[in-house]
Image (cartoon, helix red, strand yellow):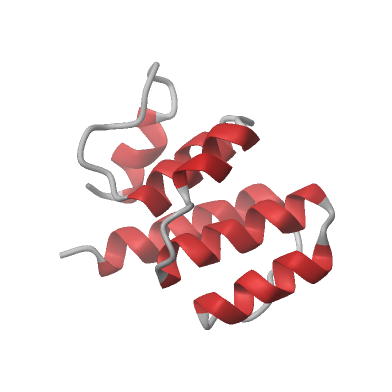
Length: 97
């Protein structure tokens, strides 16, 4: 899946089948579905940890966000949240096999 297809899928009723948990989390986050996004990223892998970090930054829980950025091995995010979610999605899609 490329970034354009991912963006288009946001208009659907459910995330595309076969997306890894981290991208499911981003999909829900970009739709404003924080709880569903948080549920999706519970697996403890670096990609989910990265999305988890952004979710807690969105929530305003910066100490928790810093913890998750560290677990993900990623720098702390800054700026507009939707832009960060989109950057995460683009990176994860580019890294997908």
